[in-house]
Image 1 (cartoon, rainbow, N blue to C red):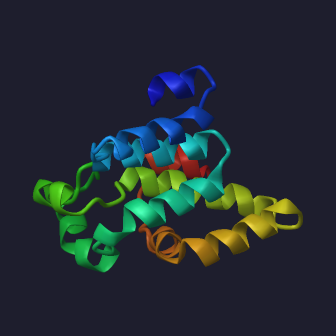
Image 2 (cartoon, rainbow, N blue to C red):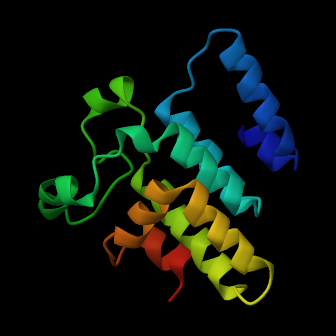
Length: 150
């Protein structure tokens, strides 16, 4: 995935993932998250939202259920959900949700043109992902400062 992204061949990732799944391989939570992040970085926000919704949101516990974990940690790391969850139900990592929030803000900035259609389609086709992004707590951490640039 990283090689295809680095060589500007992001469009080939979908066929590689499809081939692997067709051959019986299961894509890990880590790789789904990286794929979503690559799509955001490649300016494909709608596909990133749809992919997250289809492959990661089933295991999403919600920010309310994660509150006790967040309260215990001053700094959130990528793996803030118990590791035992990763094998049983894929879920979006914190960093991925920050990437998605950044993509939403970028589309919002273009909301008077093409961005409006992208936002509507994100909300229609990825409602759980949009909700997770909207409810994400604000932290004064490096990833939010870098990607959400207030």
